[in-house]
Image (cartoon, rainbow, N blue to C red):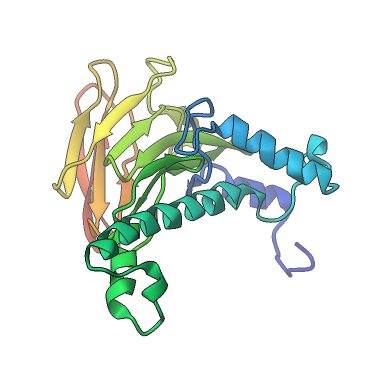
Length: 256
């Protein structure tokens, strides 16, 4: 921190970071034993990749991986995406007496066919379920994490393709009296809540009869899936609702 001229102590930085929530796109299929389009499972792919890197001199046993290791499944599935798209394009072009060999960078017709084929390509790969948005961006599973006691803890996963949020009830909220509390103090079992989002700006979802009700706000849907999770407080047995603005958008806050 001295090199970056940060006037905070390590302890102050730790306190500031505690409890923050972050998201990231997952690059590996979370079901390691599931067979993918290539016939390999994630475990098979990882073993083959590690064997190649080990032969190149990398200390895999001590987790000394080369830069880009985590993105390897994306690269592998990208090749599959292009191959499958080419197959679709070849079939279509053949009906008109053309082929991919006729393509050049001035041939917009074939370029549009290839783009359309890639955009409609969907399959299960080593990076997870592979699909693309209308803008051509890869749709990936989003992992939601929170720093709890100095370590990242997985809170849930959001599947954009299925429009489904899995929540594991592990989050810890900081109350006004600085006493950490979980949103599910009365039931500490490891439970998974399924929350399906609809087109409403604010939707209260009762996951199960045993768990609290969550309020989810979707900002700028569908172009920007920004989920604003509410803070759950157990004030008394009677719920009440507040409203506050987040980036100019009204957000319902549930209090317990």
